[in-house]
Length: 145
Figure 1 (cartoon, rainbow, N blue to C red):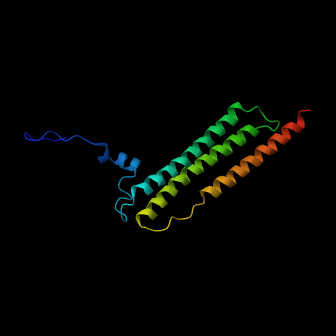
Figure 2: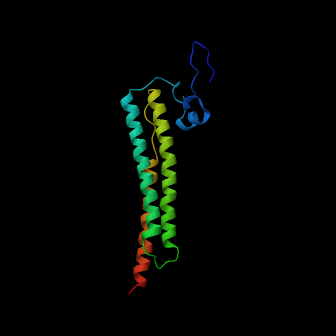
Figure 3: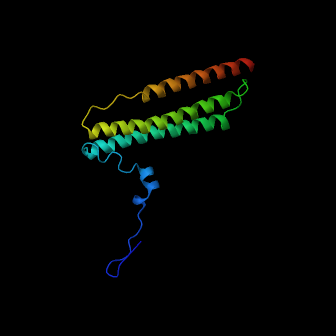
């Protein structure tokens, strides 16, 4: 924030701070390859945000199961189901960022987009959660006659 009589003092911008560069990714991909068409970059970002919404919905579902669903006849069933959904959300949010980053790199290097296991991961995760929910429901309805 130094200044001279003919020049006003420089203001500190967040972009110059280490925490801001870490938070925003800094220039990590800027110097790689060439700038892709902005439409592809924005499409990649929209896809990333869709995965983040999916993760957020999984968190909300996990919390709702633990807080709102009546207790199953199996002790701790709600908690297991809720924790499974929240763990899946954590994995999806981390994997979605990695997917965005790999796609952005491929766009900048004019290469084919890399394959993603994220849809497979979500499908298998939800298959496990749904099977667990089905088992808990069947065990609970069998005991309430």
